[in-house]
Image (tube, rainbow, N blue to C red; front, top):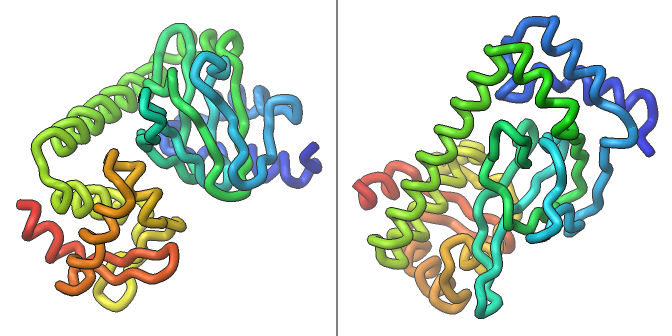
Length: 235
């Protein structure tokens, strides 16, 4: 159970969640009232929050940590759908779906997540059109990202897929360091292989080639990418 101070930190963080940014104080206050100890979870690394066929009801928001959403095909190979960090969200309500049904949701590090049950969030969507429009925009953006992702997976070779995913991760988690973007999540060759549906061995060879060419720098569980060089090749 979270202490009162931790609960206060969660409610103060709400306006910083992208979909809630700049919403009227009246809406934020109503959402704050839905944050309770019973629907707030403090999770350790590698905890499974959702499995296919056992989807959670409502919307889930990441307050701290990182979550990985992935699917497993008939051959048992994992494919990462997305990675959520602070301010990210997933879930389903009757009116909107964020496309996370049928996925596994697993923490990549110690995390704090809170949820709002569908029956509590639906009335807010009906009451505040501005909030509904935010969700429509979020769904549209996710569909565009998924369309682009499918296109890259279908038409690009392995080298292109690796560069695309590293560049995509750098936009979301990048920290500039010595002319490179350091991807601020622990990333092994196997985890990158899971993201693009390839074998670890093939990805390791591609990573080595890119490293030899100075496009990326790698060390244990860390990748840095020269975005300018990567974008030039991807153009």
